[in-house]
Image 1 (cartoon, rainbow, N blue to C red):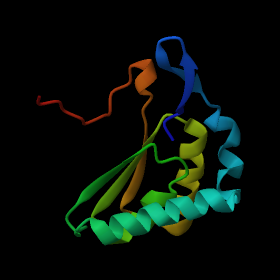
Image 2 (image 1 turned 180 degrees about the vertical axis):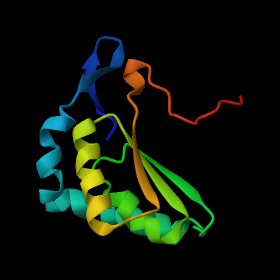
Image 3 (image 1 turned 120 degrees about the vertical axis):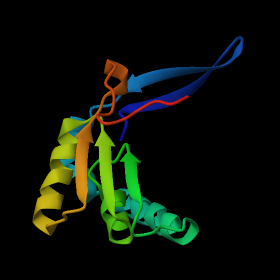
Image 4 (image 1 turned 90 degrees about the horizontal axis):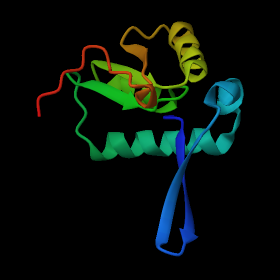
Length: 126
């Protein structure tokens, strides 16, 4: 999860968007205990598998990966998955899952774009 959630509210000139930083580190340990979150992640992963021609040579990035619910579901279909998130707490839960499941093709990376972080190994060719 990226950590940012938009809220729309009306004002005299139309819609205004304000950004609010959520405490994903604080909720990471209990994130997967909510069945609705787990179901949404499973539905997203199933839709990706159904709609995208995933292949064993693909390297996938799950940006805003949280505890890795989608990443773990996609990893059997691709070469590798890198889960990127701005919450160290979420990544800690994800890393524990990776270790427990013995997943050699999944890794995590901390990146907080709001802080000016850049993905390691990322190149820009605009």
